[in-house]
Length: 178
Image (cartoon, rainbow, N blue to C red; front, side, top):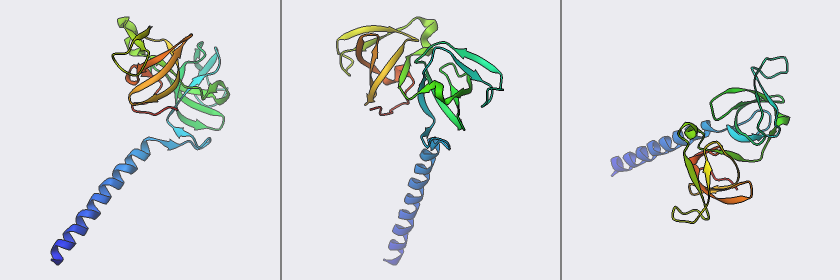
């Protein structure tokens, strides 16, 4: 009887260690930013039609790229003082002054499909069989008002509807946006 109790205790300890290690690994994927305390990585959008992407976190660093599309989603991957390291949908990375970024959530519709000229349905509800409100081209910027259960509610111009979450760059898989 004693051997069974010891085995149960050891098994419980092993399961606890595996669960704890799994939770620790998940926690490492999202950390708090050292400046803002907000999650890193996280998605934000550009506030302005002219945003310089710099090689390093200061105005003395060379400008690598100039974004000319307000509302473009970018992913913050690091923070340093008033600077944020960002990555865009094409994978370009650099530093942007924090005041040129907005917490407003936007997403690009399937930017990986630009060359294929694919279109994607914007639906009246979060159901594949729902009525189509519009057809969106890849690369369109959509305002994200919420995401849950693999669907996001978005608006483009004066149109509002639902699109599958996996067709957007600017929200994480299974991310809940409220």
